[in-house]
Length: 326
Image (cartoon, rainbow, N blue to C red; front, side, top):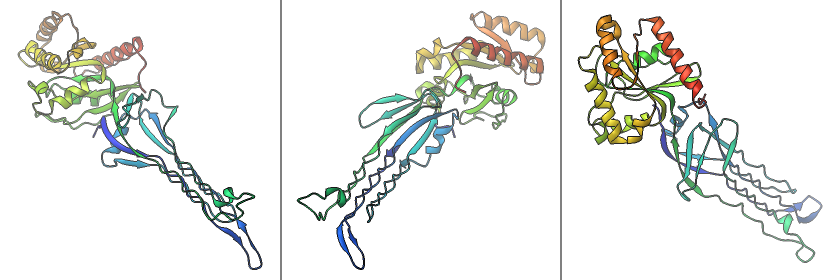
């Protein structure tokens, strides 16, 4: 399951307690020798090219760095707790729900320090003075608060296949990439987005959008939300249906009702399943769609030449625009 919006609890490690001990041997009683506690582990966020990385939080909602270890006798310091590095997809916003502060992970190299571990407590050896030769107390390690964090993936793909159910989106994704979506000739074959990679481009098959999706019909709001997170919309339309303009209009209307900014996204109209119609009918339908002043492309998953041309089109588009995520 692709998860792109999740709330988790994050906690840096507590500091280890200082020790309150005194040097003792069989023949000698000495002064305080309690060591300091170790510092708690820090919490970092780091970007990854794995766009499904937020799925790790489907069930695991609480993450904690390791606590510092307590000090010990003979002035032995406790070990620092291990840091926690949480890997999230590049393009994810990190929202601290306690302070409303917001950060964004934009590369895979930099580790963003989100929460500092607690300082270890001082052992009683640290408190020895000329006046107080035998302190019998030590510091507790500093406790760290648990923080609610919202992670929102702002972009899931370079190219998103959108359209009505059974428009051939899943079959196309399987042909173009290494993805293996479930494919069948019935409505709502795809119940969640499927991701695939082609020439370092991330492609996503967005589940079929139906009329009324913007009002919450079916899982429409979830599906439309995924469209927002793509750079280029490839509007897939089954070329064999009788009324292409009606099908096109249904999706565009849902875009407008959900978020009018979707209408401004770059879009290619892709007529699919052209092996089911004649060359003459295809030419007529391409001309019909071009009246919408759209870039219209026709494809069949059984026509290798057209598939290769479609790949080149996507690669060329990406090269002229912002760098891809992977």
